[in-house]
Each structure stands twice: as structure tokens, then as C-alpha cells.
Image (tube, rainbow, N blue to C red; front, side, top):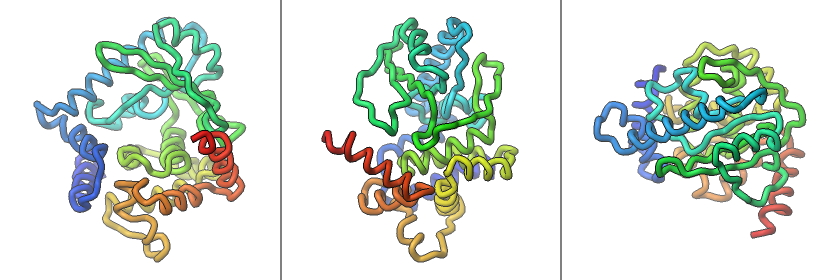
Length: 290
């Protein structure tokens, strides 16, 4: 299924289901905007993307021997995932670095300011920095690793002509699946669309299966496949239980039904221990503070 076909399927899915949020409206406006000269959402995203590119160029000029890997949205340029970068909703720049403490010096050098927030165990390995550039707030998120439940992450960086590294296609696929399912319980529909587009690439799925097993993300992929079938192929799961929880309403408004959301959050972890650990840490370190 190519980009145009995927876009039509996504648009039909959103239109057929009347409950959707502002994010979905922006998503369709941005995706279709490349074909509509006066699309505000498309122009806004394209401009934001250009600003992000210039920020990365600024980092490259002063990076010296500190290499980094560009994650998610800004790495899609290398794989031509979208016909036009203005079609993809972006909010920040995610970078995987070996040491936040060392890389932070570069970020501060180009005028970014650290965002002071309370960190808890599940995101203690990342920090955010902000700077307003030409009227746009640009946020950089530095990661020392990607998944909280893994102690030993090994990724395969690919050098690009842009001057920075990205994840290999297989690594990117695993990251996107884990980010969508394990980390964020299907919060954003455009993250699912990213995965649908990446599946059009020539991927080594045996290698991906090994990585999903090693990184304990098999359940994330299991549920991602269910929602890909639901959104892009109008195919519902046969299992009655899965049919009740993996619904059109959930993928469009995941937090509307908190019981279903929390149930899926639990089911998306590959081990009961990981799920209980995450929930306990959240309650003790984050939820309790509220």
C-alpha cells in the first residue's frame, strides 16, 4: 500500500468514525496540505521542519567528536517516508547521545535552555531543552537510551549525507513500535501512520522479530498489527476480547475510556513484572505527587 492509498484509508477511517480529536483534524490537514496550496497546517509544519533542520545543522557545526543519532520524525527525511516533510506532524527533535551531560554543553552553546522538570525512573534517561527561533518554540529531547525497561540497548546507526546518524530501517521500525505501544499506549494516530509507511520499505522482518523478542516488545507489535488492520484494512480482530478493547473509538481517542486505556497499558508490556514495576514507579514517583 503506497502513500496515497494509505492516506485515503486513513482519511476514510477518520470520517467514518465521528469521534476524533483536534490532533486528527490537524493530521489530515497536514497530510493533504501538500496538494492544497493554501493549507495553513501544511505550511506551518513545513516551516517548523525547516527550522528543525537548521538547528541540526548548527549542532553538526560544533559537535566535534560527539556523535548522535536522530530519532523518529526528523530521521524520516533520510528514508523518504513522506513525499514532503510538511506532511508529517512534528513537535520536537529527539537525539540519542552517549552522555547527556557532555552533549548538553553543545545545546546550551547554541542558545537552548534546559527545561527543569521532575524526572521519574521511567524517563530519568532524558532531558528537554527549549529555544524560541523565528517565533517557533523548538524543543530538543536528549536520550541516553530509549526504553526504560532495557539495561543494554544496542542500535545500528546509519551515517547519512545530512551529517548525522539515523537508526537502520529495522531499528527504526522496532523503536516506532515500542514507542507507540509500550511507551505511549497508542496515544497518537500519526505514529501508527508512520509505521504503516515504513512497512512499504524493504525490511528484514526476521531480524525485526529477533529484536522485538530481545527488547521484550512482542506485545507492542501484536497490538500494533491489530490496529494497522483495523485502520488501513477495515479488519477487526476475531477474538471477542480483543474486539472489545481494540476499537475504532480507542485508536482515535485512547484516553477517553480510562479503564480500557489502563488495561491496554498493562497488556502491552511483555512481562507482568515490567508492567507492575512501571505502574508502581509511576504511582510512587509521579502519581503520588499529583
